[in-house]
Structures are given as C-alpha cells and as structure tokens.
Length: 188
Ligand SMILES: Cc1cc2nc3c(=O)[nH]c(=O)nc-3n(C[C@H](O)[C@H](O)[C@H](O)COP(=O)(O)O)c2cc1C
Figure 1 (spheres, rainbow, N blue to C red):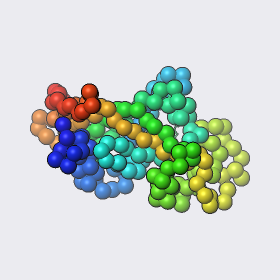
Figure 2 (figure 1 turned 90 degrees about the vertical axis):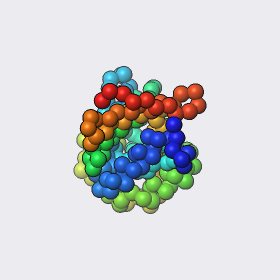
Figure 3 (figure 1 turned 135 degrees about the vertical axis):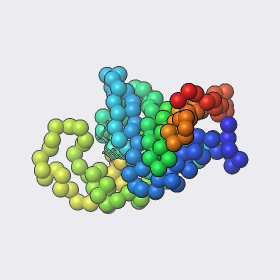
Figure 4 (figure 1 turned 120 degrees about the vertical axis):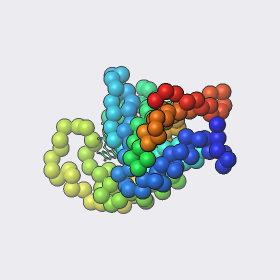
C-alpha cells in the first residue's frame, strides 16, 4: 500500500498530520524500548526529521541509559499523538544508532539545526549518573560536534494508526511483510 508518490500510506498520513500540527510541541513523541535488564522503559524525544520513504530521526546523548538497552534489543515503539486532527501513530521497528564513527552528513546537519541550548547539553556530565558538582555543568560552548551526540533512526515495520476525529473512530494497521506494505482496517 503506497500512495501515488511511492510513499507508504502511513508515512503520507504522518506527513499530513505534521503539516496540520506546526507547533513545535507536536514533534514530541514517546519512545518505548527495553532496558538492559529487559524491563520496559519509555521517554519523550523530539522527532527532528522524517526521511522518505519511512524513517524517523531523533537526536540523543549516546551516554544515556537507553543506549545500553538498545544494544541488546534494538526493537522500539514510538507513540505519537498529533492533536489537531486527533491522530495517534504507534510506530514499531528497529532503531539504528549513528554516532561519530559513521561519518554521517545527516548527523552534521542535525547538529547544525539544534539550538545552542541543546548543543550545550552535550558538554555536560553523562545523563542518568549521580549528580555531578555544579562546575561540571558550566563548560564552554562546543566548537565541534561532541562524540556523545548521536542519532536514533527508527524505521517502522508496523504502524498502528488511530483516528479519533472520525465517527466511529477509525483504526488502520500497516505492516511491512515480504518486501511490501500491507494494510487492514481494525476495530478501533
Ligand atoms: C519535551 C521533552 C523533549 C525531550 N527531547 C529529547 C530528545 O530529543 N532527545 C533525548 O535524548 N532526550 C530528550 N528528552 C529527555 C528524555 O525524555 C529522557 O529523559 C532522556 O533521553 C534520558 O532517557 P533514558 O534514561 O531513557 O536514556 C526530552 C524530554 C522532554 C520532556
């Protein structure tokens, strides 16, 4: 199931939903994965970019706990609610991590695109560790991309879409199987 421009239908729906939700907070999604002990863990991330035909790009600190769990199990699910038309997307797939070793121009472009305040966070002590001394949070602004700045690339293989604006509500499941996207309607 692809639209006339060759994009999977869910991706076209997501692009349209973002167009209808231009406010920056609409870029926040919740990303669930398993931690290093196999327990569920979920956090809010900013989706910085959508790459056609079907990848969500986030940035993160590669020293953060989520990376340890993802090394063991790269499966993750993003849950993204876009309020203007009451649409929920649940996007499940494998997460790829891109750090400094990948020579990625996308990583450089995203570093250039984030705010100075966000860049500064990558000079600070590793997230999730015991609180460091106050001076450790007062490092100069980075002049090059810190090694801990990385990308998370989510390529969904399954997208569960819910439209609460329709009456009755509508739900569609998109699955990538045997090399192509299939879709079917579900009871909401
Ligand atoms: C509105 C909002 C946006 C956030 N955006 C990001 C982000 O883009 N990348 C990120 O790594 N963490 C972001 N965070 C922080 C994460 O939710 C989380 O606290 C952090 O990534 C550590 O998660 P972990 O311990 O599971 O690795 C954001 C938090 C909030 C509340």
